[in-house]
Length: 222
Image (cartoon, rainbow, N blue to C red; front, side):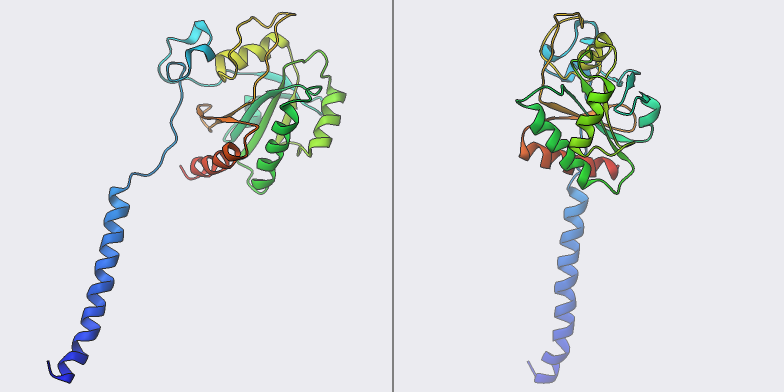
C-alpha cells in the first residue's frame, strides 16, 4: 500500500475502532438489567419471622402507622418519615452485647448520609418501661444522633412489639408484648418512601452495613 494511502487509512481505522468499542459498551448497557431492590411482603420472608395474622399477605405490605416518643419527648409518627428512606432497628439502652455495635453502625450510616435529608433512622426500645425519655436522651447524645434525623424512641410495649412482628418482621420470637415478653434482634430493616420493606441486614456486620449503604444509594436513584 502506498505511504499516502496508509496515512489516509489510519484516521478511518482509528474511528472505526473507537466506534466499535462505543457500540459494544452501548449494547452491554442495554442488555444489562438495572439492579433494583426487591419489595418484601410477608410471604417473601422466613415464616418464623412473620406473625400468623399477616402470613397470607403476598403483596402491598406497608409499615403500619406508629405513635412513639423520641429522645426529646416529641411524638413521632409516619408523618415524620414522609418522603424519606429510613432504617429501623430494635434495641435497649442497657444491652451490652449486640446493641453497642448496632448503634455504632447506625452512626456510621448517619455520617455517610449526613448531607442527604431523604435518609433517616428509627430506633425502637424493646424495654420501653426502663428506657425513659431522659435515658434515651443520654443515649442519643452518646451515639451522636442528629435531632430530626435519628429518632431513638420509646412507647407502649405492645405497640412496639406489634411493629416488630407484624410490620418489620424483625424477630423470630412469638408473643403479644406482655410483661414477660422480650425481643432481641440484630436486624436492620430498610424502608422506602412508600413504607415498603426493601432489605434486611445484620446490624453487627461491617459487610452488611456496606451493602446497606449501597442499597440506600440505589433507592435514592429510583
